[in-house]
Length: 349
Ligand code: NAD
Picture 1: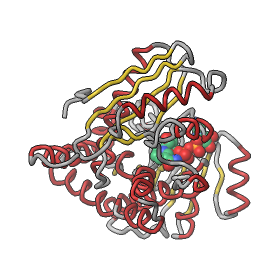
Picture 2: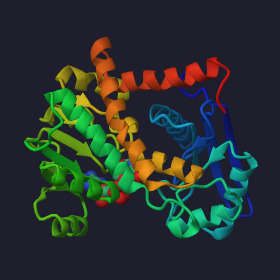
Picture 3: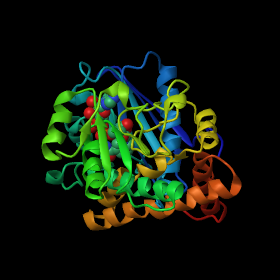
Picture 4: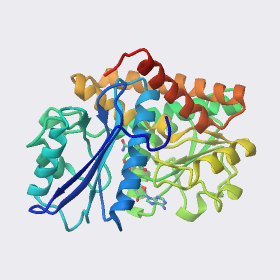
């Protein structure tokens, strides 16, 4: 697969509701393209297009590696999520999703809330991540956090020869839905946990629940003397500025697109001897949860499949070592290989 070799890109414009959206189907070889809808005040349509092409490709890789029978897709809506939302706009968007006849299934992403998902659902059945009261699977974050925890353990095993976290110091950046759940898993395993967030109320809530957690300031987290750095807030936190400051041997977290420049920083981490767990490999718990919603939700099965991330991650680290390539590249190649083999055999969706 080359970058941007997308199957279909749909521009959804509606002058009555003011909707300006783009749906990108990157690859549906393995199954219907599943990926969230993001609402963001993009400066231009070109920026929105660039983002949706990149994000939809990432979903193909994520689902492929997670062993799901799903393809990669994503949607973006151009607008300010604080001021531009109306019921009619999201119902119109739902009609566009529906017009793809099940080749695209949407879910919640940045800038969206339950209200919009409910409005989209009025016009199409092709929505997942709905609340349990509507027959959905609810918040996917606990499953995402569990998958990240499994991937983090696999990375620790690769770096230290053991996945025992009792002597490990772990810095978690971001005390949101995933970070909160991850802290619980880490403390249960006996790790020493440092946690940061830009919102003190989130930190205080976690400290009240887990008094053993050590709180640190947001600007302290990168240079902290820890074994494992777990980015669970924003993307691009591994960049030219932060790389020289990192003291860890493992990077494993939930945030999407952690490497500011995948090729450059992926290689730099390898040269520095840091085991980097590719984000799209270990944060797949959320999409695994959504996939189970499509089949008929089964929480136990979703967790069991998220646990497989441990084994998959070990195989990616092994491939990276054997071929002397960065882990992100080993993961990309494994994802592409699965799609290609199914396509070439004339199988799939
Ligand atoms: P969230 O919005 O609940 O939490 C993110 C937290 O990061 C917030 O508490 C925010 O205050 C904090 N934060 C923002 N900037 C920060 C900074 N500079 N320093 C420290 N903290 C900062 O999001 P989430 O659902 O917990 O997801 C975390 C990350 O994982 C996101 O990048 C998300 O895209 C990714 N992800 C989430 C899921 C999921 O199921 N929730 C699935 C896959 C990927």
